[in-house]
Image (cartoon, rainbow over all chains, first blue to last red; front, side):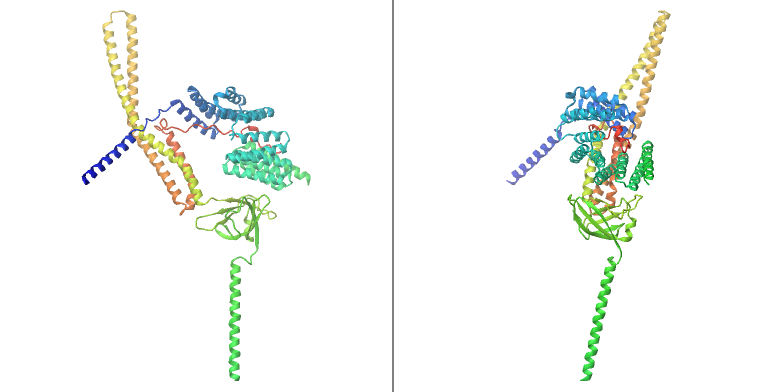
Length: 294
Length: 332
């Protein structure tokens, strides 16, 4: 009896061992890597690093390589990404027509690239029009982006910020404040901190123009806090410049001066001498105006 | 009778003296306690606005550089549902506060929350008319540890991926090199045979004529050139084969380094909640270093071609991308 039990126990053990062995050997073969896709990804990563160190020529070269690799296997997702990234690089280099040409390739056949890339391309087109500057066209492309962007829209906060900027340029601070407040809410919901900083900066500027200087100071302080946390010197300086403008508006000349000086220090530290000079000139004019008042 | 009356009077006097002394002692004690708590020193008030009153209570200690300088004296709910928190601090500390002074709420395990007052670095002093300071709630150590774990997870995945790639691809690489060696050796042999054949043909066809002789000489030269190229290739391959073990060893060392750092970071992350808060706060740079090392290892030969990279992301569409918006044009 006990011998039979021992025998069945060893049989059970052998069966378990065999099952484990079969399971271990039954894993499928590793998928064959796609060399073109790997090349596209590798080049894209290199390009992103080059862009971060402002080596635009290298970024352009590598994104073009990534685009070629993606197009050689008709990988439209990667190709679309490369085209959008190339548009940004061209725009940073001041080559607006080249940037438009890249984006237009997506906008010409949007079905090929999908709704998300279509919306992103339209949003990029709107930003290029802001740079032109052609505000009517910017609004048209913002509408296109909005109409094709599925909820939750990945560029919703950006589009609201573009509308706020256009409203500010058209001297409609009330509308600008409305769009910017919406952008703040969308960016907060989407966890887009940099865009939230942009929205708060626009909101602050609109509030300054509306005479709501206390609220403007709060909005700009929040934007400053975000940009300092994210480590974006260019935006920190802008926040300080607009905070100075707000203080000027409420006749706080000493505070305005302090903000301008801080902005200059940030620009100098970041190596942007041209912007530092612009702010210095503005500070000079403010000081002269204050002296004339006395 | 008179003697008893004198004794009673003396005892009453003694009792009175004891009571007076006790009262004086109690008053001195109360006075010194009040003095210790700053009851007789001049005080100043600063305030900050918090989103909510979580972990804040009146009486919470306020410190500067670890020294107690005051406490939360009041908290008021504002119309916008934020909370105005007023700190009462020693007046002598007030001039040290700059315009960007900030209060950090510090919460650590097993300790009551406290406010760490940061003096700031702005050129201007804190306004005495509106002494508002900034406010930040520092995460608890558990929260920081969780954050670190979240940041470390992708790095550990990367390390794992790199390790797996090296393990699985090292064998393939050796096989490729062995094949290449064989092929080059065979090619070298073929070139030698072709050269011999050409020499033989030249000898046998010497009588055909000058033109054929010249053509043959050209063919022979080409064969010699091919032989030379094969020899070069062989030499290059030999160099690679010699260098490969060292390179693989170097890669292995880098990987060990990566593993060690990741392990350290993980250990610190797990242990810090209880023991080393400052070390824990210093870990983010270590995490960044680890990420850089992993990125470097990815770029290094021979990993570069074998490690799968994450899919590319489209750069964010940021509303501040236009150059006109990045120019400082106040008043526009």
